Image (tube, rainbow, N blue to C red; front, side):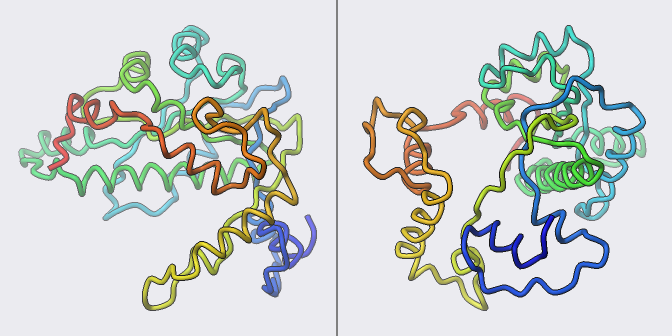
Length: 277
């Protein structure tokens, strides 16, 4: 994988000025090297492997040990076929070796309260947030564990593009919603390391300070462009904004966020048992 300083510099696309130090068991190098993999060999991911990886996912921290998430393994070809139209941007959904859906789950603890004769009076924004974070942490641990075992993974946020259809196909009851899917399999291609924002942008000491944001983003745009320039054909929303002579990360995300995404999300949650009070 290379020494830690090289891996850190690759993650930021420049000399980050960070001395990696030691890494006796290779965990740091593994984390610094992770990348999304979307091309897989035609080889199955065994049930035993998935059970082990889910045990790792369940080892993630969670709020007050409430464990407000569920994980669906999608194996049935008929279910995958029914799910595919709701995720049209993911062409290989039916054939990917492993497909899991991570869900925030308020329902389980509501039912447990019923079993024990106690009212569940926390159907509110805090529970929504806690369940979402719990599910996200579990998904992150799953991905890290899967990649440590030699698998490649790619999160699948497009499951939230059509929440009603996805919930219907997966039989999700009130109080449960998908935060994302994860595709996994034995890598066919190596993938690439995606450059992240510099720590000077993301990390704040004692008080929030983004006074140097514009200059830092300009530098970051140039750094990324020097490694992976975006071809004209992949520029976002050219019908609205045309083709930019220089197309950096900030131009891309600004275009993406200039158009509403998933406007039905709140209505879906409200109609599926979340009060969001």
